[in-house]
Length: 226
Image 1 (tube, rainbow, N blue to C red):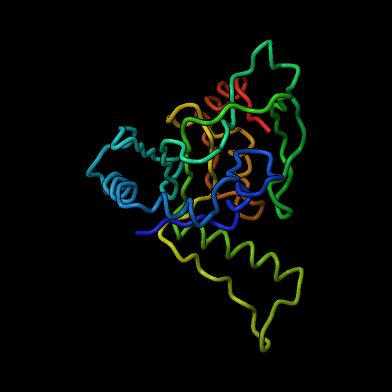
Image 2: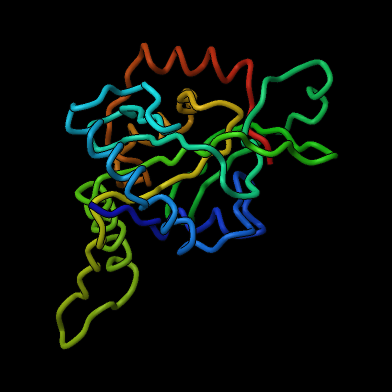
């Protein structure tokens, strides 16, 4: 089994990225770290039901995720990454900002809010790696590719160029710097984008009303940090 960082998650190594950034290690170095036998063996044992989700094994915690193709792996922070969210307080409320945001050009912008702190962010204690299965990554990549074919002549010898299949079993689609190893609620705007389907940059998982309301409760009291 192998885990690789997807092209989408490479933004976490960009100094201009607004959320969790890793600037003291390369993508390849991070991949090497998360593919060591302790992390891989623990991950394999949990997803095969030999170990339990949500329990700590060798300082590694695997959470189930919001769909069968999604898993989350929390490990001690081994980078310079800072925390990506914190509670909204009277002291930081003045730094709360909002706007319509798209993570990439092909997505519809959705309403979001975040904190822009004047003195920077504290270092994260944990990194939460959000993983998608190869099958889901290939599914979303194929649709994105088909959208591009609708805009551009993307052919070799008269035939459309096929997207390159993802070359690992699981791919990192997001890296979250956290002060704890617990799963934070997916943001409401992310749930809405997912429900819109791969056509609009989501995963195609239908909206779960109960999970959505739990998310609203959490993100009414917390905000991501840019």
